Image (cartoon, rainbow, N blue to C red; front, side, top):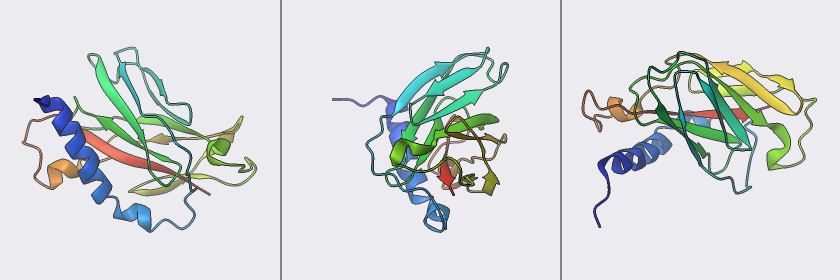
Length: 165
């Protein structure tokens, strides 16, 4: 059976991004998660929109994308975090992210929470049991391209966003 090229590229970025996530192992208070969480794949168009996986969501502003683009969300295997992948883009635009705080267990929403990327933590705003924050454009970088595994000009960007308290 022949595997489509785009699917191979997405699988490659998942493996490389997981290996490149050493900063995640150094987090002091990442929220653990052993609950099975589904992946979510959805297209977002020029009007923007939200991709909601139930345990976390990402939302893009209007005019972020010129055309419809695929957004993939995969749960981190051990932490309350996600990997956001845009297999048709070569840079990550700004977006909002939200995590349902008690999805992975009985965790109070009165604690202080942070949303963490490889650039570091930022305080999350907690409302209605959801911790949310803004991820800036370019904050999630393409480790695939830096490792020389993606040809120049090949769209593909991916990165992790983790909840911490």
